[in-house]
Length: 366
Ligand code: G3I
Image (cartoon, rainbow, N blue to C red; front, side):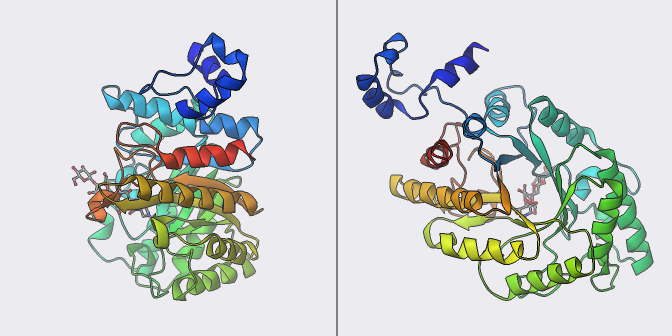
């Protein structure tokens, strides 16, 4: 409690800013600025958002340090709860985790995340029900007839969404169904038969939880091209036929500078899908830089982060930005992009980076 009230009193900037403000305001004399090298108390992002009545959710994916009780794991869980008001399981709601053997479900970690989110007043974005990747080997390593696949899909979606009925605000129902050329990917869920599995997944999810928002989620939709066109056509068709798709998730895996879409491109992309009546979420934001990062690349990254949050906040249909992890201590980026990393808001010691302060400044000014 003492820490929280200290944070509420605190200035939302680092020590240099404090010195300037404190020179002007006698009220600072009671506590004074932070000594150099010590973390300045700060108003957490979610509290700034609450104070300013910011209408977008600010989330993070929780990864392998979730629930850890030693070392930096303790800080990880404190910061996750303190800074964010939305939680997405990075891996713990994927098929291989939830249904490791056929018909045998393991909800241990997923339950813990949902309970943690509820205790901390966070919404949950469920990720992900139907994907071609990270499926249990019993599903992935053989072929299924269309009838078999449809029954398996129904069982999985109904069981998982039903378990969290009323507790998960939004689901990534179908993830990455289309490749970079705009062509439907092979997936065990299709059972060798076209794309009807997509419609089936949304209908099953709606039946299992009528109140959850149902999303199609994918990457590289932020730029115009065949993939964006193909997903647009897919979702337009689903909407026209009354299939319950509520939203589009723009994953937002970017590279600093030119590898981040311009504000204009983002606006155009968000508006294009919003015109179908879809809600927009940024679901997996990270902005990688060449490592070791430089002060310059971290400043550009900060501006890129600010742009994404700002365009979402300015788009009526966009009401959530979730980063894919929140600390460079635990990110998928270095393992998948050699020579790249430092993609998140907090550094590997879980201290805020310039990108954090850029988002903080943006929210503070809203
Ligand atoms: O769980 C095993 C562990 O038992 C084993 O010891 C270890 C050894 O490598 O691997 C662990 O599995 C890893 C898993 O993450 C959990 O940490 C996999 O190797 C690794 O490939 C897997 O990577 C995940 C990736 O999806 C798989 O495609 C990343 O953590 C996860 O961040 C990433 O997330 C995806 C989204 O779901 C969809 N959009 C793209 C995004 C980034 O790829």
